[in-house]
Every structure is written in C-alpha cells, then in structure tokens.
Length: 75
Image 1: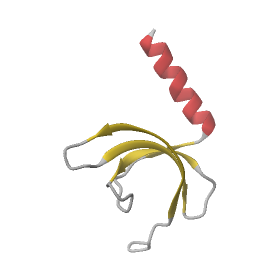
Image 2: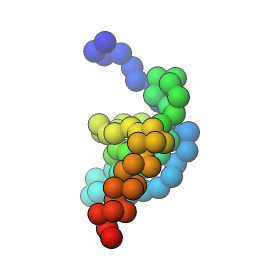
Image 3: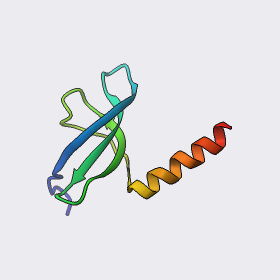
Image 4: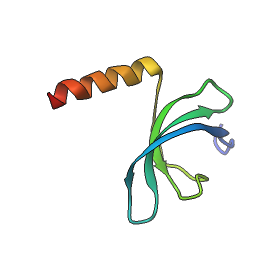
C-alpha cells in the first residue's frame, strides 16, 4: 500500500492546541480518513491543511476516557 494516496476530510475543526515556528498547528479536529466514519483527531497540520504529521485518532468513547484521565490528573 506504499504510495497509495490518503484521502481525508476535516469534518469539523474544534481547536488549535499549539502553533510552532514553521507555522504548523497541532489541532483537535473531527476527520474522516479514507471515507471511513469520522473520528476525533490530534495531529500537526501545515497552514493549508494539505500536509500533516502522524497523529492519533480517537472514538468518542476513547476521547471521553482521555478527558476523564486528564481531569483526574489535574485534580
């Protein structure tokens, strides 16, 4: 599958987590990858949202678990 184009659609932009010196932003979005159901997605994007780094995708249940873990850590 090397060289196979990756199809993606940013269904909803939720927010920017960080911006680096090169202009790339670490973002939380809802993204559909290769026509699959959309998932929550955290990764770095270039300014035009044409190139991206490796990131992490989460289902709603997984995101809820992460939020709960963060809340417990911050108490």
